[in-house]
Image (tube, rainbow, N blue to C red; front, side, top):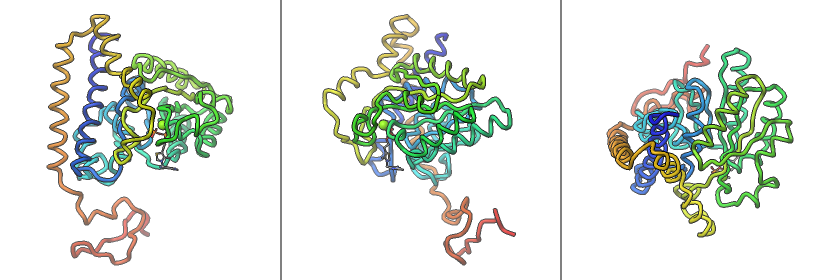
Length: 339
Ligand SMILES: Cc1ncc(C[n+]2csc(CCOP(=O)(O)OP(=O)(O)O)c2C)c(N)n1
Ligand SMILES: [Mg+2]
């Protein structure tokens, strides 16, 4: 990878970090409602993984989705506006933090129900195989998701049908506040692939280069028609489970140890500085632009209007109440299935 490519990896990780810090601040100011799950500490997984995909590959995530959206090139403005619940957000303010999606970028979301997105991702992979598009699907999930029924049902079918899909498990060793060893009978999660005759692989999720290399490797393998892969990335989230659950109980020395292995600091020191790819001045320049971009995203989100109330029941199969009026106008049933 050349200098420009390496600096782009740094820029994306730093963009995610600053975005997440800002969104936590905005949550504290009640500019953001509902849930907010941050990616601090896990930036190398998002950036390493997404950078190794083709731009038209399908990407599906759980609710911890901001980092993947930004890595996919969705603007900080659109993501922040979605967190603010505003009209210019990625889904017009309807989804919020857990449901970022942009179909034009084949970023399908953003799912709040643990494990429920796996069969949907398998459907995308099946479509790609059936239509021979050459696309692959990446489906990201947490370690806690690997115990749920849909995980096992989806892996079984994906392997049986040799679907072109990468199941990326972000193992941050906690499911909310429950440690991995308390919630999973197998703690090397990549070994769960064995139960389905699937290829499994483990990677250091705090090393963006290793992450990228692993996804390049498995993506090529999947794209060649060899069937799915279960890729486990070991990492750690710096903050609690969510903004309303900031103090997930974890041993202080464990948190401190992982923070000392910060993926952005590691990449900066071990790769960028040690190999003379970049100077502190290069990074300062990038950081300055990111600060401006994130400040701008907040101004943009704050200035964006609330969604129009009369559109409340759009994108639904039926108006929940017959002859419903909002602001004096009759809310007509959606036309989708109207005879
Ligand atoms: C079916 C279902 N059960 C429970 C929940 C509540 N819940 C939300 S996140 C979460 C933990 C998931 O942990 P993990 O998959 O490890 O992801 P992480 O948050 O660590 O990224 C739980 C239990 C849910 N959203 N859906
Ligand atoms: Mg987890």
